[in-house]
Length: 142
Image (tube, rainbow, N blue to C red):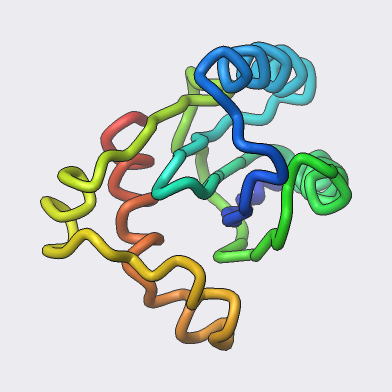
């Protein structure tokens, strides 16, 4: 099976409260189980950062749907590629709200300047600290 991953960042079209996020996670987890997609959703400084992995065909379909989902504004692809094996074998969708203290512990400062990611090219994006945070949580939760 060809495995693929995608990570992206988006603004929330409507600010979600904890209950809204729980409801969203329930729906996403059920759907991901059916599609054999696993991953992680982070809420960092009001933005969603997500990593999903699974069969390449399914990841392509899901990412296209995400790009057209009205719950997202300014969706930005951070990283994508092929995998030899899954990072998340048991998580249809892990979730973590990342605090500024966690960010500071991982990268040494709190202000990630996430909005600036929309104005830089892909090479600069691939070195941005938000990916360090994402992949740190990916490694620790997998």
